[in-house]
Length: 188
Image (cartoon, rainbow, N blue to C red; front, side):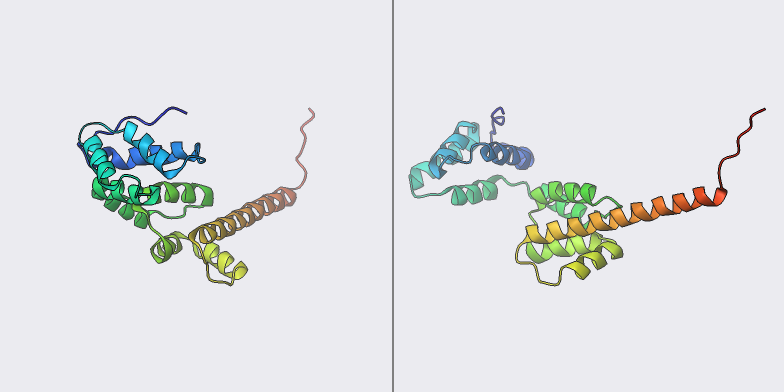
């Protein structure tokens, strides 16, 4: 996997996508430590972003962690309009019969919207059909401790609803075939 492109800090319009590329790349190199991650990100920065990075490094030296660095760079360059647009799209996103497609789109938008806990769960609940909601509530009676458990349970409920719908359609098709009787042959 190639390094993400350079980020100059002049426009925040490209930051969110660039930062996603950085975090994906780091997922392949999970064994690195905080200061290595911070130094590596510094090699991807140019212009005003590099000035910001060097100022922060000189000020904090070794007294920062990857978590604090991540929060600081996101606070500095995060594109709030992109966040607002993603939140709006999340609110409009609806389950259309494919739980896999819905959750893929949901996760992509939520990378920018950063919804968690109650806000995340409300958006998903409002988007689901009654049958998916019923299936999830019928099979999971506990409160969810983490968002991923909630999303996985919703995914499993959606799969069950879709399987049930496909089975029902297959049964109806089989009934139609049986009620028509055997096909007539014309051997003339």
